[in-house]
Image (cartoon, rainbow over all chains, first blue to last red; front, side):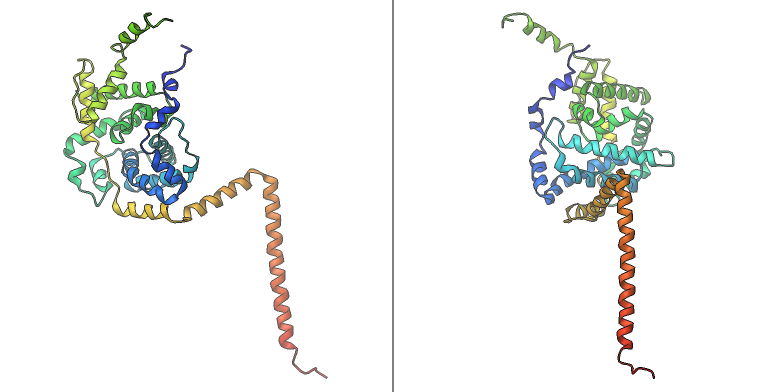
Amino acid sequence: MTGPRPQRASRAPGASAVDPDLPDVRAAQSDRAAFEVLYRRYLDRVYGYAFYQLSDHHDAEDATERTFLAALRALPTFRDEGATFRAWLFRIAHNTIANALRSRSRRRTEPLPENLERAAPDADPARLVADAEEYRRVLRAVAELPDDRRQVVLLRFVDGLTSREIGQVMDRSEGAARVLLHRALRDLAETLGR
Amino acid sequence: MSPSSPPRTTRETTLPTRTPAERLDAAVDEVLAGHHPPVSPELAPLVDAASLLRSALPPLPAGTRFEARLASRLTAPRSVAHVVSAVSDATRRELRHPARLLITGALSSAAVGLGFTVVAIRRLARRHAEAGPRPAHR
């Protein structure tokens, strides 16, 4: 098929008008201190995205810090041209985490509940996990997914991004992101015996 | 194309023929909103897995100390990160042009050499000035 891809067609100029972060982004572009609003809004989500992939509290903090510093530096270049701010931010996080994983000499460790408990020393563990056994099973299944499918699952379920935003983060079309999600859930359903 | 021509019918019929991936995506939206949507039997296990993921992958709050530390770095006027970034940008820019790097190196060496010479001359002049009041030896 040579026709325009649905994602391109739907990425109309008005598409980004629904970006709820845009007023705060504009404010932060003219006043650096206003970036704090966006930072507070997305800190936990970026941290969670990093932790679920890096499985280490310190590495996740490091990646989170790099992400926000890079975002603050690049904020003047952010344009309201299709991608939402959060897709833009998670793309920075995605690249930062990919670099962190690449530069790791040791093999990536599997995320485990004990790591989760260390994830936020001052957070309430009961709030983080309701059923440790099920959590372990699901995390193992997620960890066994191919990289791109795992990325889609984390971005969709941990960070709440839409398939369209996931496509923007991963440099794929919206349709391709949906297909990856479908395959990931099919794999997980088989692994978890659903 | 007139308004009464078939496209309207075509549009109506395309809705139910969404791909499984599209239908699953819509169902996941529902799951994330806290609902359990009715789906076709072939998608039911996948939606169950989505429900499980929603409850088993909680958001992970960052530590409050980390949050405060990073906030202060981000809001500080001209943070260290900016200085480091500016230096690294300048270095990268210089390294991109070997000729400029050579000139910069030569100028830096000359500046260091000149600095040493000035210091040596000043020390010598001071020593001469201190030796000035002594009576001449006959």
